[in-house]
Length: 415
Image (cartoon, rainbow, N blue to C red; front, side):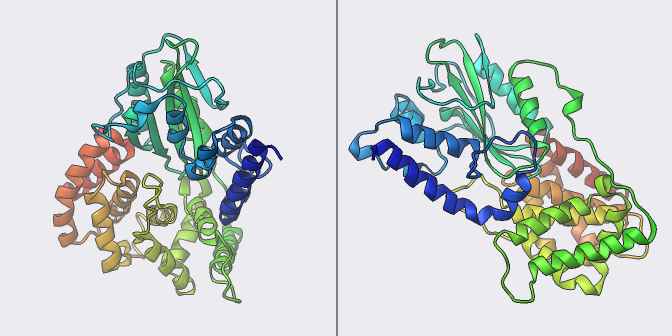
């Protein structure tokens, strides 16, 4: 068998096994519009590597190169003539400093993804600055690697993707912007991609690319029955009677809860589900799971830029659910915060630059409690300095954090 085909088979099999762990998210993602995947469920980037494996005849000592990439294309670009990418250090991971002379040249054989645009006579510095501003305004967390002309990004909906800048191998004055989705999927991801490309090309922001709510309307007994049955089914998924939780069940259930507790999208249903989830004894086990996962410190040291999806989903459920109950005098939102959860929320705000999405969601939870006039005085005194720091970082890099931290400070000051 041709060695290139054999390498392709081995790499493909490895990726299939890895993605078996993401069964639920793959099933959900398949309903998203225009998702570019192979029949094996690969992301665009994984499909590209199988193409390279089959077409490039690497020397014997480098045949294991593709197996070690694990979705990291730096080695491949460096191997084919961009050696400066792996030397030196970045000045600041919070800022993207790019210029036309330092961005890598796209190898002639390299299969460029469809999610890319070419900008003739483009300025890499201007393009990177425009993209940075779009990521900030859309509250997409990013870590920049200037020497590789790339940005590793995570959307509010937990889609992890990479932006890369290249020079065209023939027209070196042409700058190419490519977006590679690495994991996760959400229908709003396409709006983010379109906004990034518009910014790269110097186009005005398109208001149609802003988020829009799709409200679910219902009423009466139908809503109450739907609320209880939904939570019961999610409990069955997370805590099956046979004790064998399915792979990906937690991520799937939390993603459903994120949508069901969003009042902008689920209407009155979200209010009833939030009330049952947070205060009904019947769902105490489900509630405790969300609290514990919101405090998770788990991370993958091999993927430092990929956020803990379960933690963020849990925080978003709490932010949504407490928002639904703002104005309710029957429930004390402040009493929900046990000491462990309270300390973690403080920590997220205090370390906003490490995880701006977690800090933003923590601010939303504090904001909802403050709006109900149920903030503890000790919490207020600790929050003041943390909110100032978080607000400064949000103003620079994460728009939602800028807005929500300021709202919490205003509520505290008025109290």
